[in-house]
Length: 79
Image 1: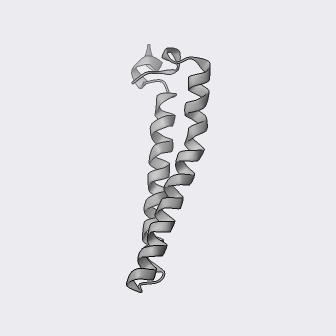
Image 2: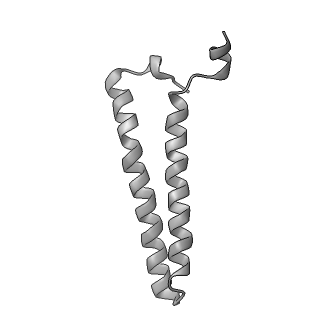
């Protein structure tokens, strides 16, 4: 995986800025899917809560994946 030294400043900035967009999309898709499934199956509000939680978890996973790119590896810190 490339570190910050391998990326140009603009590409790095765009990757970091995309975290918020990725998080919002994941939460929105989870909420919308849960809402429409609840309406269709008559299980209001349980599927909405479940899929919203899944969307939040997916958003944090994307945040974590991007954040790990900018943290130095433990081996590099010890050197």
